[in-house]
Each structure stands twice: as structure tokens, then as C-alpha cells.
Length: 302
Image (tube, rainbow, N blue to C red):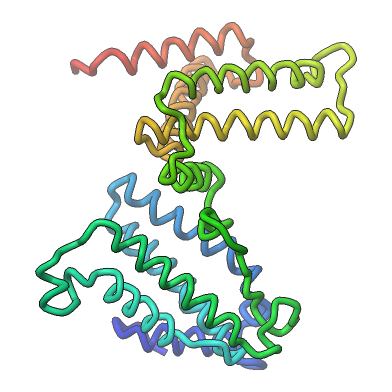
């Protein structure tokens, strides 16, 4: 087996890995459900390579993500559900269908992207998919252990917002959907009012549960309430980001990077003194944190 630029070689490798007896024992044990977390992780690795502008790494990460598509398609083919070619056909058909102003008739191309056409096409796609699910044989029903659950989403405006999205991203998409029918704050000011309200509600239930308190309340009921209030606060904060047209996932990633960079400065400065954070006081580390912040604000003039 040799490398190749032909997608057929990747499919051959995937089939070989999944062949009983001669294949890879680990690969043979995998299912849609066990592979799904890797699929999500690989998508984030792609995003990370893009954020770092690392094109050689992006090439590799896109390959890893493509492997995930081949993996799921192979499992589906083994269940006689669909194959890789069906996946390719489905996405090409969708792209052609969703771009009549590019691939349609002469009249459709001349009309351009008419207002509302995207919503109409997606509604038609949902109806077609519902019809397709209804036609599935009993062996493809959700309770069949041998098949991939069909995952019916239910009905309503929010039904097609994927449950598999990161929570912050899904919050923004849910809010966007509701806003399209007028269910939205009229401006940003009341959103901040709501955020302060949710913050107060979280503080009220969280402070008694502080593990550093003399007698913290860690009852299951209070823990559940804290989780609920924290979720409410994060949902409103996602709404703030949506109103300001800021990606909350990207904002949080940037905050993570900033924290990592500043904490690394603390470690580096302590290492210069042959010390570690474990042996430093909070006051000392706070001072080094402030030093890191000051250095970020001061341009390097060297």
C-alpha cells in the first residue's frame, strides 16, 4: 500500500483497516458514536492551524478531517446505509441546489440571489429529508442496535440548529433564528441589564457553595441551581456577542491564549530565580501577572 493523491487510495486504506481478521483491532471496534468525538476534535485542529496561519499544519489537519469523513462513510457502507460516493453526491447536489444564481437556468442566473431564496431552499431540503426518513425500513429505525439512529429533531423554527455544535455557537444560532421572527432585544442596553440580573442570581446561589467557605453548601439541589444560573448567564453573554457581531468562541479562545501567555511569563520569571509557581505566593504571582500585562501594552522597541 503506497500513498496517493487519489481519494480512492484513502478509501482502500479505510476498508483495509476495517476488514475483519486482517484489519486493525482498534479500528474494528469503533462505531459512529466512538468516532464522533475525534471528528469534532479534528475540526478544531483545522481551526487552530488556520488561527496560527500554519499552512503545512493545515494541510495535515485537513487530511485528518477528511479521514473522519471516510471513516464514518465506511461504517455506514458496512451497514448498507450509504457509501463515500453517496456523501460526495449529496454535498455536490446541495451546493448546486443552493446556488441557482450560479448553477441554475439562464433565467435563475440572471435573477441573482433573490431575497428569501436561501430560506425557501432549506425548507424544501428539510421536507425532503423528513420524507426520506419516513421511507426508511424498520431496520433503520432509531431503536435498531445495528443501525445509526436517525436522530429526528422534532419540529419548529429551532429544530434544525444542530445539537452537536459547541454550546456557545449553538446559543448564538438559536438566538439568530428567534431574532428573524422578531423575538429579540430591541438594543444592546437591555441585554446588559439582563446580564447583570443573571450575574446577581448566580452570585446569590454560588457564594454559599464556595468550597473555601467555613461550611459550604454542596447539596445536589443547590449544585443544580448553580448550573442553571451559570447557563443562563452564559446564554445572555452569547447574546451580547451576537448583537456586537463577535464570535464568542473566538473571543474565549483569545482569552485562553492571553491567560496562557501571561501565566507562562510568571513561570519564566520565577524560573530565573530557580523557583516554581508552587513555591511562590499569590501576591508574587499577581505582581508578575501585572508585569506581563505591562509588557503587552509596551511595544518592543528593540
